[in-house]
Image 1 (cartoon, rainbow, N blue to C red):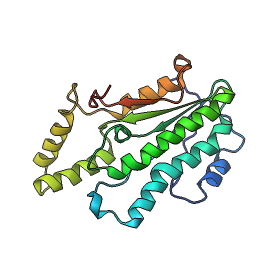
Image 2: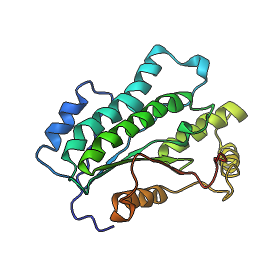
Image 3: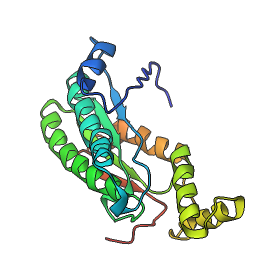
Length: 211
């Protein structure tokens, strides 16, 4: 969408020295836009999580993205820079299959509000995109877990039923595609969104009904 220079950086968000790693990789680089994205925890019943599950979710969904944001904000171009982090609709409404996602991503959303306050002093914007069900490998993993739990198998029919149930939750009756989330992020990087900061934008085909 017009970007001439894109610097993809893949890092383990659970690394304790994450901030140092990112600074080494992008030292002396000034960015117009930064996208912070990571995976999520596996689906499991709330009473089955171990202490390790909680620690991993904290590192992956809260500490890691927060450290990345903290390290990268100073390298965003003054008056023009925009940082977008990917979250989930679990910050707005409980998903019983993803309780850790909701708990830690909600904490990150609060931190992003604080980062937006700080970054605004330099004219830099910080926003969050909260997708609903999007057709990704992670969604397939969750779909398999739910099918096994509900139907005792993850065959084609069971997987199809799970997808149809999820799609029926929204007025548009469909699962989103990754490109739709990318297009929203591109808008938030553009000058057309220059008045928007500190906000969480839900992209879920209308699934969440709250005002």
